[in-house]
Structure formats: structure tokens, C-alpha cells
Length: 246
Image 1 (cartoon, rainbow, N blue to C red):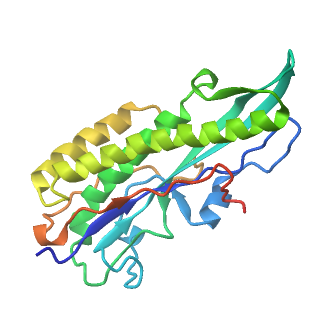
Image 2: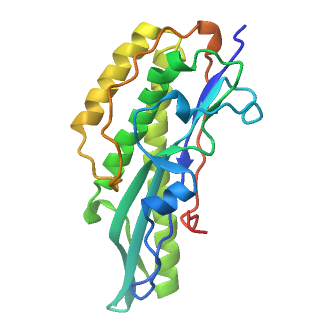
């Protein structure tokens, strides 16, 4: 019987969206995000997994990557209709420190870092791809009124992002399955290296963190006992009205 379980979950939040050209809202900054416990993408260390024996008691450790899109869309009248289109788009990404932790009984966290890093790297790949989307690749709607266009746009953006998150989650789950949830250390090393190469080849279009340290080399982990790994994954979808600023 497997004694411990490893898990990941998404922090999928959509930061504040302005609903018209005339609305004015403060733009999210990294200082705002970090005040809420979201830290920029980086190379994981043991310090990223503080001991918390009360949180997620069924798991040996728990990692929650974060993708935080921010957008602004405008609504304009034209020939009796109201057209909505995104005119500002940016994405924050990293790690949710509020939910990431390990159990005091889990003694192989150092060995599990490369496995956890691969999950965070997959998250970063998808975050960069989402951040790189151009206006023509983002939802546009036409409504019979301003309110209808606003409502339809909110729904379309929520559905659009949910589909992008699902693609990311599917890759994470495939990685977990292929590595037997970290038990196959040879496969972890092989796939983690391939994921790292993909990340390095993916242009960084997410919001930069100006004071971020230069990323160090990926963690090299010792084998993780098979009894300490088992599948667990969940995705938390967010409403487009959810905001770090609330």
C-alpha cells in the first residue's frame, strides 16, 4: 500500500477585467500578487514547501502552480450592434505559496523537487503560450446591446481560458502517469529534461518580475520511494470576475 501521496493543483484565477473603454481599474502588479501569496516562476527549493501537517492531510506534498491572466476589453457600437474585443492582455504566472506545502513525515521532499519542478515548468510553458496570444486569437463577440455584449464576452473569456487550462492540466496528468507518479525516477529525469528544453524554447511573454534572481540549474533529485507517490490532481476553475484585488 502506498503510504503517502503527491499532488498538484492549479490556482486558476482571472484578475480584474475592465468592462468598457471608460472603466478605470488599477493594474495588477507583482507586488499585489505577492501580497496575496503568488510568487513568480523560479527553480524550486525545499523552502518552497514549508511543513504544514494540517493542510491537505492526504498528501505527502502539495504543489499549486498559478496562472493569472489580466485583460481589458472594450465595447463599441457599430451599425446598431455592440462589439466587444480584448485590447489589453497580460499573464502573471508562478507558484501559489498559500497552498504549496509538505508533511513533516514526508522525508524525501528534496528527492521530489525535480518531479515538482517539471510540473511547474509545464505550467510556465502554458502560461507563456497564453500570454503570447494576439488580439485576433482572443474571443470577440457581437451583441444587440452593451449589456448583452458585456455578458457574452465575460462568458466567452471564461470558456476560452478554461479550455487553455484543461490543455495544461492534461499535460501534467500525462507526465504524472508516464512517471508512475514519480516512482520511475529514470523517466522523471528524462521527461523533466525534455520539458525544460521546451520551456527554454518558449519565448517568455508573461509579466516579468524585475527583481527575480537568475534561475539556477534544475534540481537533481535522489530516487523517490515508490511508496511515497500516488496520483492526485484537481483543477479549480475561476470566474472572470475573480480578482487578486478583491
